[in-house]
Length: 493
Ligand SMILES: *Cc1c(COP(=O)(O)O)cnc(C)c1O
Image 1 (tube, rainbow, N blue to C red):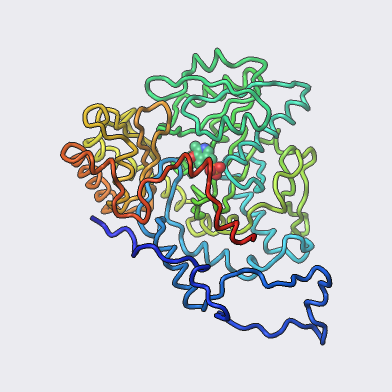
Image 2: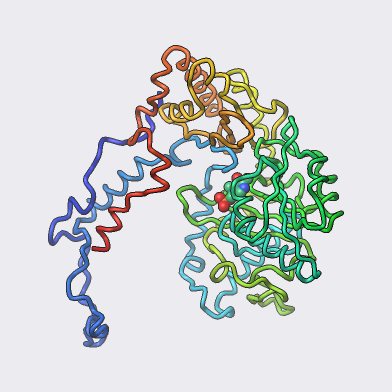
């Protein structure tokens, strides 16, 4: 069994190790030409020092190194979290994002002093437009869900300009939870249609649901069971026939990158998760980016600013003519945009296509090897991911998808996505990504095989897993609904 981390028991917090007078460094007194900086604040200067921990530099280093070792990340082990595309984040991206000319600029500087950064934005807009097959791009949205919401607001504005208020947005039952949430946030009604027994869009059900009150149809293609819908041209044509927009949830772009383009499939809009397909680190709610790519008809409605280049080759931030307004400050999460650009340039067109090909090959390799251990839902050639079902194991041994997921942690693997998509009972959704070596895929298959064996011989062990992690089974519902924010209270008091 793999050593998952260097955890060696609980340690005190920095507040508990605080010793009066301990310091990392001593700053000279803050003064400018004899003026005491504190005096500048007058009555607003605090009279008692902030209640911050007092520790030496080595204590801080060890504290955070210890916390980092307690965590699981793509740098510590394989992370086959379906739909999330937890691929390795190449270090060249980090190098680029930290270049002083990118890291130390301020977005409120005049455009004339930001030409390099604006040039990068302009290039990235063009690259994503080429990859998407759609001419208009806004890099503003900060996440995939934000891109979905922005697209729906753009649809609303374009429909309004046609004098055509519509109320409904149709989504299939395989959709990611953010799709219906974005629809509600944008003030539309959700209409859900069922999938076929093969996990595809039920074209008849779609045609029945489409009418003159339909604003859009949102589709993830390849979808969340890892299948590319071959009826796609018929689907987008049917959507356009009633005057609605076809939206592509591009979170699964990793599977088709450089092979086909959502614009060529008839989609009017697409969001791209730069923090999935384009290798920016994610998880834990850190910064991401969900650029929105749209057709020529929709481009004038994009949120501003976008970057344009004039005849003299000078870059400017401009607001599209009929813009829906701002959805975020400045130009979005700039550091993420730099990483995505570095990734695109370091791979090149052929490299990006190879990413998709390798992602699909790796997923199919695992689908076949794991398929001998647990049944695959929709067992056919998949794209970048596939879904296993533990339903039979549950009825025979009383072991659930959750138990398997937790036990995988003891074998050194991050668990896959579980209980999603909702249409598969006891779902385990696996996406290896292109960056895992074949030996790791084999080790994952071996871990699954051992766990299924354990389910038969020692099911209680699985119900108690994980056994080797800093924390065991968490009450995830309470953690989300009634979080304990004691540390924050300590800071404030
Ligand atoms: C991740 C994901 C989203 C949402 O993207 P965020 O960046 O997490 O907001 C939407 N749809 C699918 C299919 C996803 O996998």
